[in-house]
Length: 113
Length: 112
Image (tube, rainbow over all chains, first blue to last red; front, top):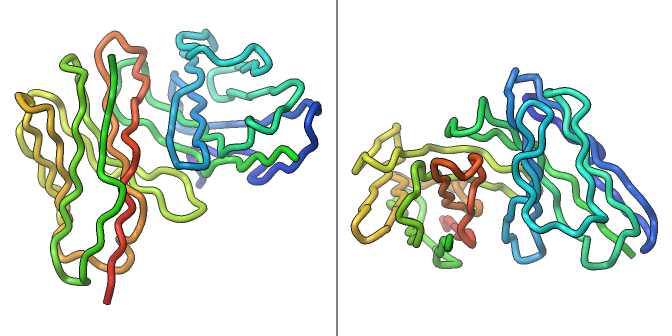
């Protein structure tokens, strides 16, 4: 039983394209997140949603637009992809804001060529 | 501001203990975590400690927290080859929306 699942696992696309990454959690958690891991393995938060509402937006370019249709899903849409967007994107969830443990998905490796 | 630092590499022999260190700057950190990332995989939560605790033990893992020095360590007893991975410490703070601020990661290599 996958707790936090992301699709696709790998995504290769050309500069200028628009792409989406989907995330679903079956843990009944209220809070979901997107993190970006760069080529040096550095991890940084991008967005956080609590019960479908945006609570954290860490100065991410507005080409990145998260969408949460319900509290079990948090999708990430990226417009006009650039080479520098190449990274591994991780979705995560936690029970609620302020609750310690976050569970991560397996990651989506995005390569922009 | 928030800053979390770790040494980049650690190499140990199988059966020895590993100690991975982490320093952080945010004195309002509420929880401190250790995550493990194996190659090509996501992050696995190993353990976490609340900021008013000094120590937490969970089987082969021991977490020590020195809040005065803002220093966190993870000790892995009887290190095995399956422990080879990148280990990230992370912190979150009350009022921070539960976002995790991650350290730079320590690559642990276990040699036979």
